[in-house]
Length: 382
Length: 140
Ligand SMILES: [Zn+2]
Image (cartoon, rainbow over all chains, first blue to last red; front, side, top):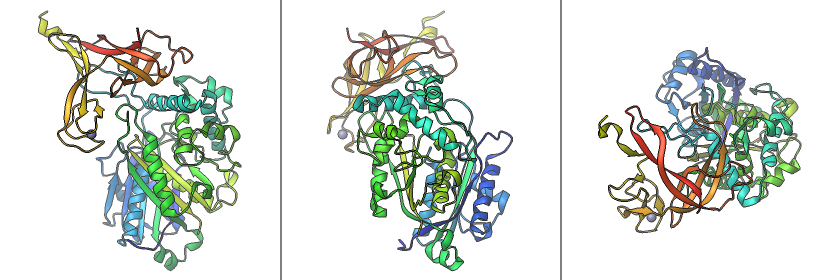
């Protein structure tokens, strides 16, 4: 493995939204070109493409993106890893450069989502079991995890709801977010209850979107003279779920996240106190509370207090999801992991406008897919 | 209609309907580490022991580990209902509907004792077959 670091030298995302008249490769191509433009490079400079997309995993999306932006014949790897899909594509690019195979690669994450509830599909034989053997929908899975936290630590409906108030507030400063709308606490708590304690405003938004990043070896960054805009990848970690009690019926999003966080902190030689901002996987408001503890941003049992004190709001000790998060920016599964990278890089470059975390030097991205895959990256302004 | 056209079936493969006797939930217990899994398997994913799995009849008693009250589900599914995660006595965790209790967080106590009961699922398949399902209810 190369001792040289890997850098992000270009990244961008499209404004998330609903684009039923466009195709997945078309959306991916747009982000790819934006990221290449940001790096001042072209597709002819890329030595490999890593493409994350979930719902068309068998559809050769990466190659079809190249059909739109330039068929250079480079190797293409398509990844699918639930909500960790985009982060996995990014990490595969990082691995290839670390291995010394390439100096310049492109990572793209893209998704076109349907609307409505995810999960709970059940089996195709017999009778549908949704609502009979409990519920398998994603809001239910995360409601049951939130209630587990409530049982252990007394976390309240109001504290969970405050996560949505915060992230929706953050999104008002991000014109690439699906929504830019304040949602006061009464509105969040009074919104349609989906699965207690998650109301509709505490569930992530199903949107279409894409994001991309250009990764580059240290040697090549220097050669290209791009160090002034380069952001260093200090750590990349990916885990699967080890056995834990109940994980057959309660997907365990925490253990794989804790393992990935520990590995990432170790690789970077830093701790949570060194981070200036975090983009974490707030697929539901309850999830964000759990991940404060899973990522070591606070001690176990103190996440409720953490949201109460405003520590994770812009201007607080460790701002979380200043992009608006999945709750408000939107959650196009395969694009989310790379959109998180875009957000952190933008802050580390000091280009985040109204939502800029002042003086940010180091940030973390986190995604977790189905409780089976957690991916964490730590990025730093060199 | 003939009997075959309205055969009584288990709602899922870990519900067992013995020819003589009451329905029960089946677990698979690792002979090496004692972990109880729901669903048949050959290797223990906790201790990695191979071919130590033994089918066991699970008791009809457990404790409520976590739950949610579901207000929005798939079209046609009656709401609200309580989706409950129950630790079965002696090992194994099962998800199901908690019935005969008000769907109100103030009324549902974490850790409460529940019984596993079996009855008609109330849904039939396209062939008109009836299904036996399990439910949780507050312990008698
Ligand atoms: Zn075992």
